[in-house]
Length: 255
Length: 255
Image (spheres, helix red, strand yellow):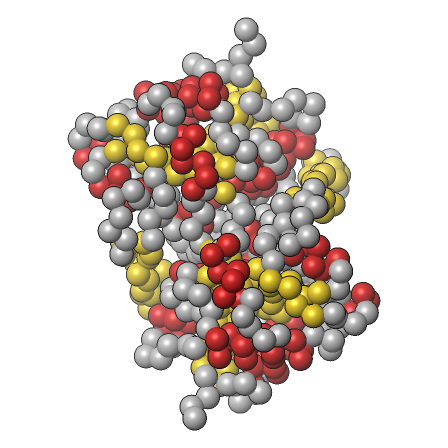
C-alpha cells in the first residue's frame, strides 16, 4: 500500500518545537513534505502576500524529509506547496501546527495555524490544525503525540467532510491526564483587550496589545468547555462565513 | 437628536481614495472618527500585531475630523479605536473601506477590510465592510456613494443582527448603471493560483503570487452572481466558523 502524502505547515516557523513534534508523528504515518514559514507568523490570520515577492528555499532541518522554508504567511505556504512544490502530486492530508498556544473559540480567526488548514480546505484538500494550550517555546508536547496520531489516522481512514478543516486543541500537560476527545462547536468567547501604553527612548508613544480571554458562552458543547475539562476539542470549521440566519432580517431593509 | 458616532477604518491605508470617499459619505450621516492603517494592508486577513509594538498617531488628513493612523493591521485599528481612542464612548456603527477591489466570495477570508468589520462584530459593534470591484488606486467611486449612504442609513435604522458584519460589494462603474441590491450568500468560488517564478539580480529565485478567480458556484443567490448582473451584493458574515453539518460525521470517528 502506498503511504499517504502529508503536507506539514505551521505558523510558529520551521524551527519551532511544535512543527518538529508534528513532523515526527507524521513520519510514522506517511510520506512527509514540509513547507513552513522561515520566521514566526503568529496572529497572521488568513493573511496572504500580495504586492510583495515570496522566497521559497530548501531546508535541511528535518534531515531526509523534503522541506522548504518560505518568507510568507501560513496561507502562502499552503499555496506554494500545492502549486509549486507539489504541483504534480496531491497531498492526502494537510496538517498544521502544532501551535504553541490555544486556537480555540474566536482565536481561530486570528490563527495562522488554522489559516493554513482553512486555505487547504479552500483548495479542496482535507486539513487539520493542531494547537496546544501552552504558549511556551519549549512547551511539553509528550502527552499529546499519541492523540495527534490517532486523530490523523481517523482523518485518513474516515475522511474529513468537504469544505471543512478541523481545529484541534489540546489541554496543556499541567492539567494532567487527557480524558478523551470531544467534537465541539466554537465557543462564543472573546479577548478583552487592553493596550499597555509606553514611551520610547525618544519620547514617542507606543502600545503593546495585551488582553484576557473571556468566555461568555456557558454551553456544554463548546471547545473551551472541553479544554477546561481536560478533553481534546475538535471543531469542524467551514470557510463559508454567510450568516444564513441573518438573511431574512436583511430582506426587510428598504434599499 | 444626537448624531450617530461612526468609526471608519480600511485596509488600503489612510491616504487611499476609498477611505476618503467613505469619510465624505459618513460625514453627511454622523460624527466621524477615523482609525486606519498608515500603509496599505491588503490581503492581511484577520491578522493582529502580537509580539510587536503598535504606533497610533494623530492625523490631520481629514481636516476637522478626528483621525489616527496606526502602524498595525485593520483588526488592530478597530481594537485600538475601541479600547484607546473611544474608550469612553461606543460607536453606533463601524464602517470599513471602501476597498479598492472585490471582497466577494472567499476573498472575505483574505480581506483586511472585512477583518476590520468582523473584529467590530466580535467586539459587539454593528459593522459594514464596503468594497468596489475595481483595484485601481484612482478607481471611480462616484456611482456608489448614494448606495453607501442608503445602506448605512438602513443599518442605523433597522440594526444589523448581533454577531454579524455585512460584506457589501459594488460593481465597477464600467459595468454601467447599478440595478439595485441583493441580499446574498457567499459564493463557493476560489482563486486558481499560480506562481510567477523569477530570478533576482543575484541569481536567487523568488515568486509573485498571481491567479484567476474561478466561480464554480452556479447558484442564483450568491454575491458573485449579483455582482455579475450589476447588483450590489450584501452578505451577512458571522465569525462562528463551526460547520454544524459536519458534527455528526465526526461523531462516528473512533477516538
